Length: 274
Image (tube, rainbow, N blue to C red; front, top):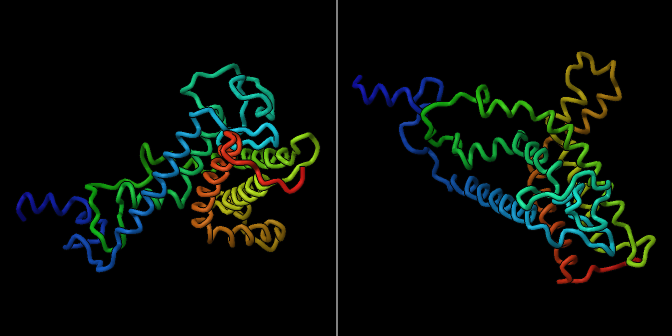
């Protein structure tokens, strides 16, 4: 075997541990469409969330106590009055630090290390592999055993923090039942906030780590009927984890966008009570 041929045999799809494809692809369908749509969807959310997290405007509706999830919890003196539901233990922050600096990094870590999102961006962004029966373009593959991908194993710890942040988002949704003149109030913004937080809870508890927490390490389900019941419910949700992962990206942007429109006086909140 010639030197170039030998080198070719050791790289990418021709390596001993990979399926050997002599052609670029064996597919006759539009296999590239799914990775492309995934890249577009993820990029759209990243760009929108990044801009909104740093712009520091139109993120709180004082009349109804609507607070966008991209700014929760807001714990700095830089926060507009009323938006700090848990006080302001931190001083004013420079513009390059998002006001929700305590939650956003953990939520980003939770999404990045999510088992579904790994599959999504491994295939669509890194093309590793781009699709079944499509040649692997990379020269080597070490899996999640070395830096930086070994960090993916921290997913369960991000899950614990995500649960806490979901509790905070729930509190924000409850506080938002506020009328313009005080007391109880209910409007379209409340519907959007509640639906968003419910879907965030479903996405969080349908996580593989939650499934492991509820039923992992048990040798006999019969001895733990309560945990087994919880595990079966989480497992059912887990089968739709991908759908909830995408749905919650959409509801997060919708919730923030609606609050931005109301807070900037572009539209008025549709009120049902108060």
